[in-house]
Length: 243
Image: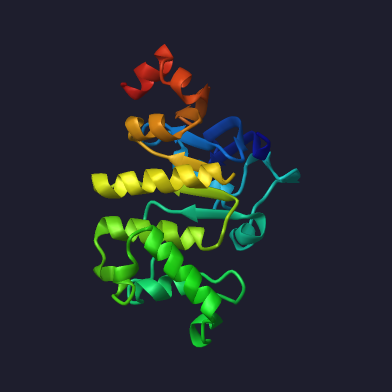
């Protein structure tokens, strides 16, 4: 598989203290890469740097062969990147359907609310909501969804943009077993379709089922990287992660 994103010795520093140091690994199309580590190990900081919320202190990120020292959150769509945050970014006072229609990859997302949505966009929204099993909730306010349903809607909103690279920050947290199984199937299908997925997740059973490769962070440094099954058997990883 080709590397769609290559991280080259990236680092993040605050007041002389490096919270990420010399982070180097590839994200490949058609693969799921898990980012593993205890709280405070630098996982979310890494995603923030990949999406332009934080700028690199050192190193560079190569996206589809184009080397970048800085990313802009405004250009993520053009780069084919979508992110699902740990904290909800839904518009709670809008309906489930309008939350999907708002994320419009052709029109400006603000003005799109005041325009009549064409049948193609409506059909896309219907399809994605049915895939996630929340089409029957389409006309209720997003704030009235259960926690797990809001998580699924967040991911559905990301996928309606048809990203090549999907970054997920603990997407399974708070999901029921039924919803977790549904999401596992969806992510496996996206992988089969050639998408690159980066997954921050604490549940090692889910990581084992989904992730082709894993990167283990400790105190902002990579202590192991490679095929997931091999990584989880490394003594240092077991000791660090208390497996």
